[in-house]
Image (cartoon, rainbow, N blue to C red; front, side):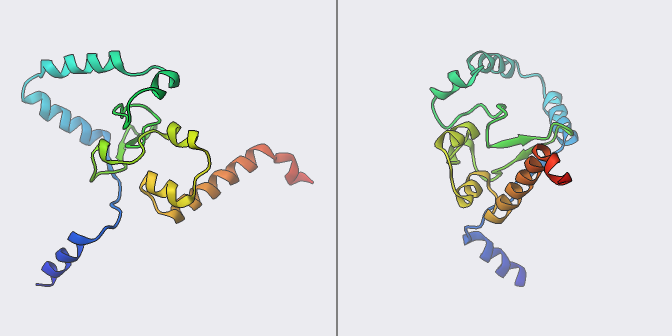
Length: 152
């Protein structure tokens, strides 16, 4: 009975859902399952068509329709790939690509300065976490650019 009450509370709330990470092992397992079902030739055809129309530079990308559907671009905000482990993190697991407001980090950068709240909404993180990341980054930049200041 208490469990039902808790489920009811979660249905209507508007809270941000956490991102979801898939490891390389999970992705490989999923690919093996798909291949076991038979090879899909239309998938190969589709992938080659996408490779042909995918923009190769920012100048080609700027004029394309938004939201951007090329999630494999390193500037796309829908997912992140960890270069060390190869795992994929879905930043918006409950939404489809066309449901998120901004899809390209370069488009956001072109706008100029935005608030921590706006960055949090775009990245599906809290304002406080964005502040922490900003402070960490600024500390790293200061440490990398001003080593002579520490000796004085």
